[in-house]
Length: 289
Image (tube, rainbow, N blue to C red):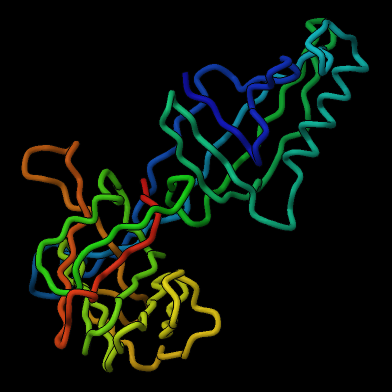
């Protein structure tokens, strides 16, 4: 059975104070921003690839009951207390909230805002009330709960990033780490052809960190994926490929021929002056439409 948690609070309350309406929607698939490009003398539109996704919204419909927090039958006062508690949960406005979607052992999370909540509709004779909240996912994609780190080689084509296998959406905020020695290292996302590279030398015992989400890079002395305290080398990073003028590498899953269940992120890595100590690491969380 599928259910949701908001900031760690089950939206199907364990004591029965409120429940999500049966048939509540699965997390929605995002739409694509429409761009129609046509020119005189040519029928139809010119295809535009690499379009970005729109933010998604999800309505959550709650039935609030006259139950106590201990699970016992209550009265109108308990109903009002439950409405207030749910309203407080939905009323956070100063930060993004964590919405978790759970089906069995499968967990997906997203940072969300509650755009609107309806006025409660009370049905005192029946002992319940109804509230509808509209949830917005500004970042579009749902993610795994935690980051995972993959270790590959600093030089090698067709490397499958196993920790990101199964993704359905692009991973836009991965952190790349190149262990020295390496001269002019470059990493390419095979699916899109996008590349991020560094013009310079990563000395032996040093690490180049490229934060694709923050679009910053640094050379550091410790193998911790922490950019703080390192030497900023953002100006030495070159990004090429579709959309590279305003974003760095988006690791994009590609579907195996004829098998939509097989989805893998594949990268090519290159550098000169490497040794057995050279390596490529990628830290990130899988992404889902």
